[in-house]
Length: 310
Image 1: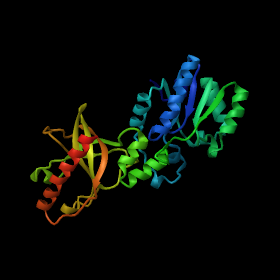
Image 2: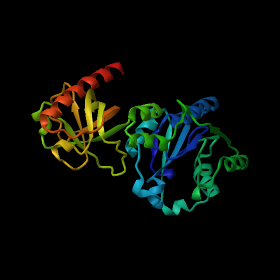
Image 3: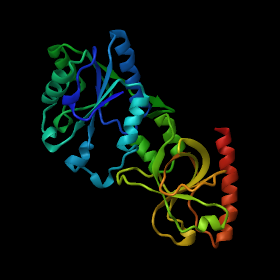
Image 4: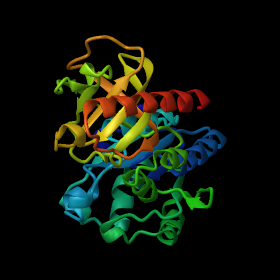
């Protein structure tokens, strides 16, 4: 996939099939749009082009920023779009000045003039331009004017749930990662560098890798104990993760840590990725470390059984 951080760097594509969006999550609904694009591009002997924005528009427009969290970091979002098989990714620098463009101005200057699409494929709920006034009907009208076709992909419904980034975020905030993963089409993950903790886990036979996350807008799932998979230097391991405040030892601050099974290497300051499979239980305050250890032994047995079944 070719990536362009400035649309002026885009040097053209053959019979472009285009879509536009923020694509947080790159979930199954998004990938249904991508698959439609790829089928259409193949029929046209063309190439697929995804247009997205950075920073996220709500950050620039200061809309509900206090509650704004993303399923994926920008880096991970790009990786997932590439893995979906897209040919070109254009990342437009979203500024307040850019936000003032009307729907038609945006489409003419950034899509028609720069890309010259043969077709635009959008999701069922897509809006674009100033105040999100651009609609599917407007796209149809502009398509007649600028000689491109338009198609809308209907919502993807799984187990009676319409797949959307909002729904997935809500599930993660409730700790329902297995349900969120079903809509994502992959396992929700957190990537960070391993930092020093207080070492108490090692004293009871459950050493953990504590990770630090740089991205303040990364969505962290609900507190609890999770069955996990862990990637360390391109190797994958099973593990048992915890998100929370570790009440038994009165830590107080939110931590993200994982006990990696059958692993005994020094990975301080290395980057690891924790993929969350299922929430096993709530975080609990125990009377002492021995009671905690007894529960962790049970948790490990349950986690191994679950991961084996997966």
